[in-house]
Image (cartoon, rainbow, N blue to C red; front, side, top):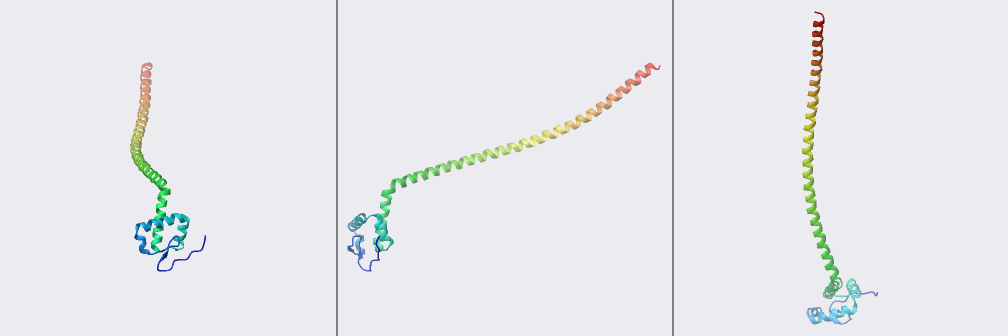
Length: 163
């Protein structure tokens, strides 16, 4: 790669070394010939000349336009496939978001049911504890009643025997 210097004011040096006025760039035919010169130089050389400010502002703009067109030509299919991939990724993300919302809704329903079940289980435990307490009380009363019945039987037997 050679060393480049910026063109002096006035007529600018074209890609092939020809002198062109900035106003010439407006002309479509001239633009086509400039683009033809860019094609002859190749992308690498055009990029280098832009980098080292060999072109004036309008030539640099034309060179950038030409490079952009080359990128579309070279990578157009890739850009379309990337855009399609991005669209599909967006659709997938949207579907995943909807599934996440549904899963969250289901989780909230399950949580509500679990809380309800926990409350019901708590009430059932309280009822079982109360029933256990009542059973113990009935058992004690039954034991006392049995003791009194045995004592009454003993008194009745004693009264018959000792009479």
